[in-house]
Image 1: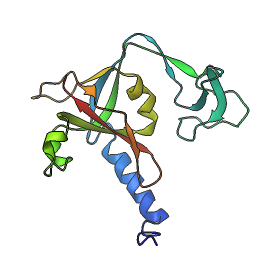
Image 2 (image 1 turned 45 degrees about the vertical axis):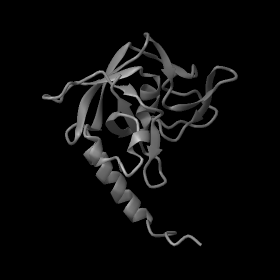
Image 3 (image 1 turned 120 degrees about the vertical axis):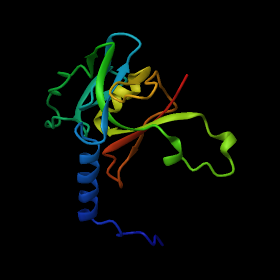
Length: 173
Protein backbone atom coordinates (compact mmCIF):
# COMPACT_ATOMS: atom_id res chain seq x y z
CA UNK A 1 0.00 0.00 0.00
CA UNK A 2 1.34 3.42 -0.95
CA UNK A 3 0.88 5.84 1.96
CA UNK A 4 1.59 8.80 -0.32
CA UNK A 5 -0.99 8.00 -3.03
CA UNK A 6 -3.17 11.03 -3.69
CA UNK A 7 -1.10 13.28 -1.44
CA UNK A 8 -0.16 15.56 -4.33
CA UNK A 9 -3.32 16.46 -6.24
CA UNK A 10 -3.57 18.38 -9.50
CA UNK A 11 -3.86 21.74 -7.72
CA UNK A 12 -0.61 21.14 -5.84
CA UNK A 13 1.16 19.90 -8.98
CA UNK A 14 -0.04 22.96 -10.94
CA UNK A 15 1.23 25.25 -8.16
CA UNK A 16 4.58 23.43 -8.22
CA UNK A 17 4.91 23.88 -12.00
CA UNK A 18 4.01 27.58 -11.80
CA UNK A 19 6.51 28.15 -8.97
CA UNK A 20 9.39 26.31 -10.68
CA UNK A 21 8.64 28.02 -14.02
CA UNK A 22 8.90 31.41 -12.30
CA UNK A 23 12.09 30.45 -10.43
CA UNK A 24 13.93 29.30 -13.54
CA UNK A 25 12.76 32.13 -15.80
CA UNK A 26 15.43 34.44 -17.20
CA UNK A 27 14.33 37.28 -14.89
CA UNK A 28 14.44 35.21 -11.68
CA UNK A 29 17.12 32.70 -10.59
CA UNK A 30 18.24 31.51 -14.02
CA UNK A 31 21.53 32.82 -15.35
CA UNK A 32 22.89 32.93 -18.87
CA UNK A 33 25.04 29.90 -19.71
CA UNK A 34 26.88 29.09 -22.92
CA UNK A 35 26.63 25.53 -24.23
CA UNK A 36 29.37 24.36 -26.57
CA UNK A 37 28.92 21.65 -29.17
CA UNK A 38 31.80 19.68 -30.67
CA UNK A 39 30.90 20.79 -34.18
CA UNK A 40 28.29 22.82 -35.93
CA UNK A 41 25.76 20.27 -36.98
CA UNK A 42 22.42 18.79 -36.14
CA UNK A 43 20.68 17.94 -32.87
CA UNK A 44 17.55 15.88 -32.40
CA UNK A 45 14.35 17.89 -32.79
CA UNK A 46 12.89 18.93 -29.44
CA UNK A 47 9.34 18.81 -30.77
CA UNK A 48 8.82 15.33 -32.22
CA UNK A 49 9.72 11.67 -31.71
CA UNK A 50 12.82 10.63 -33.65
CA UNK A 51 12.83 7.31 -35.54
CA UNK A 52 16.37 5.90 -35.23
CA UNK A 53 15.73 3.18 -37.81
CA UNK A 54 14.61 5.51 -40.60
CA UNK A 55 16.79 8.32 -39.20
CA UNK A 56 14.07 10.94 -39.51
CA UNK A 57 11.06 12.25 -37.62
CA UNK A 58 8.38 9.76 -36.64
CA UNK A 59 6.02 12.74 -37.18
CA UNK A 60 4.49 12.29 -33.76
CA UNK A 61 4.42 15.10 -31.20
CA UNK A 62 6.64 14.31 -28.16
CA UNK A 63 4.30 16.08 -25.65
CA UNK A 64 7.09 18.42 -24.50
CA UNK A 65 7.93 20.42 -27.61
CA UNK A 66 7.01 24.01 -28.31
CA UNK A 67 4.47 23.34 -31.12
CA UNK A 68 1.79 20.66 -30.86
CA UNK A 69 0.76 19.10 -34.18
CA UNK A 70 -1.64 16.40 -35.33
CA UNK A 71 -0.29 12.85 -35.49
CA UNK A 72 0.53 11.89 -39.06
CA UNK A 73 1.23 15.46 -40.14
CA UNK A 74 4.76 16.79 -40.58
CA UNK A 75 6.54 18.25 -37.55
CA UNK A 76 6.52 22.05 -37.95
CA UNK A 77 9.89 22.46 -36.20
CA UNK A 78 12.10 20.06 -38.17
CA UNK A 79 9.82 19.63 -41.21
CA UNK A 80 10.00 15.85 -40.85
CA UNK A 81 13.80 15.70 -40.84
CA UNK A 82 14.00 14.72 -37.14
CA UNK A 83 17.00 16.95 -36.51
CA UNK A 84 17.58 20.68 -36.47
CA UNK A 85 20.67 22.68 -37.35
CA UNK A 86 22.68 23.73 -34.33
CA UNK A 87 25.47 26.28 -34.01
CA UNK A 88 28.76 25.35 -32.37
CA UNK A 89 27.73 27.33 -29.28
CA UNK A 90 24.51 28.72 -27.87
CA UNK A 91 23.41 30.72 -24.84
CA UNK A 92 20.49 29.46 -22.74
CA UNK A 93 19.20 30.34 -19.28
CA UNK A 94 19.50 27.80 -16.46
CA UNK A 95 19.13 27.94 -12.68
CA UNK A 96 22.62 27.11 -11.40
CA UNK A 97 23.68 25.95 -7.93
CA UNK A 98 27.44 26.28 -7.56
CA UNK A 99 27.90 25.08 -3.99
CA UNK A 100 27.24 21.33 -3.82
CA UNK A 101 26.68 21.30 -0.04
CA UNK A 102 23.20 22.70 -0.74
CA UNK A 103 22.12 19.82 -2.98
CA UNK A 104 24.33 16.87 -2.10
CA UNK A 105 23.99 14.68 0.99
CA UNK A 106 27.61 13.86 1.74
CA UNK A 107 26.91 11.25 4.43
CA UNK A 108 29.60 8.73 5.30
CA UNK A 109 30.28 7.70 1.68
CA UNK A 110 31.71 11.04 0.57
CA UNK A 111 34.75 9.31 -0.98
CA UNK A 112 32.48 7.69 -3.59
CA UNK A 113 30.83 10.96 -4.66
CA UNK A 114 32.36 12.61 -7.75
CA UNK A 115 33.76 16.10 -7.54
CA UNK A 116 30.59 17.83 -8.69
CA UNK A 117 30.98 21.55 -9.24
CA UNK A 118 27.49 22.66 -10.27
CA UNK A 119 23.93 21.53 -10.78
CA UNK A 120 21.50 23.11 -13.24
CA UNK A 121 17.72 23.09 -13.48
CA UNK A 122 16.06 23.81 -16.83
CA UNK A 123 12.91 23.14 -18.81
CA UNK A 124 12.63 19.64 -20.32
CA UNK A 125 12.74 21.14 -23.85
CA UNK A 126 16.42 21.98 -23.32
CA UNK A 127 17.32 18.30 -23.00
CA UNK A 128 18.44 17.84 -26.65
CA UNK A 129 20.70 20.87 -26.33
CA UNK A 130 22.28 19.68 -23.09
CA UNK A 131 22.61 16.08 -24.32
CA UNK A 132 24.40 17.26 -27.46
CA UNK A 133 26.65 19.78 -25.68
CA UNK A 134 30.24 18.98 -24.85
CA UNK A 135 30.76 21.65 -22.17
CA UNK A 136 29.16 24.67 -20.50
CA UNK A 137 30.34 28.05 -19.24
CA UNK A 138 28.38 30.32 -16.93
CA UNK A 139 28.24 33.70 -18.63
CA UNK A 140 26.48 36.09 -16.29
CA UNK A 141 27.76 35.27 -12.78
CA UNK A 142 30.62 37.50 -11.71
CA UNK A 143 33.07 36.56 -9.01
CA UNK A 144 33.29 32.89 -10.02
CA UNK A 145 35.65 31.08 -12.34
CA UNK A 146 32.98 30.51 -14.95
CA UNK A 147 34.11 27.49 -16.81
CA UNK A 148 34.36 25.21 -18.46
CA UNK A 149 32.11 22.56 -16.95
CA UNK A 150 31.43 19.13 -18.45
CA UNK A 151 28.42 16.91 -17.79
CA UNK A 152 28.71 14.35 -14.99
CA UNK A 153 26.19 11.94 -16.47
CA UNK A 154 22.92 12.42 -18.28
CA UNK A 155 20.28 15.04 -17.44
CA UNK A 156 17.59 13.65 -15.13
CA UNK A 157 13.90 14.43 -15.81
CA UNK A 158 11.95 15.52 -12.72
CA UNK A 159 8.82 17.35 -11.69
CA UNK A 160 6.26 15.54 -9.50
CA UNK A 161 5.49 12.91 -12.12
CA UNK A 162 5.12 15.37 -14.97
CA UNK A 163 8.79 15.53 -15.99
CA UNK A 164 8.65 19.22 -16.98
CA UNK A 165 12.26 19.86 -15.92
CA UNK A 166 15.72 18.35 -16.01
CA UNK A 167 18.52 18.38 -13.46
CA UNK A 168 22.06 18.16 -14.81
CA UNK A 169 25.22 17.68 -12.76
CA UNK A 170 28.44 19.28 -14.00
CA UNK A 171 32.09 18.75 -13.08
CA UNK A 172 35.26 20.74 -13.65
CA UNK A 173 37.62 18.89 -16.00
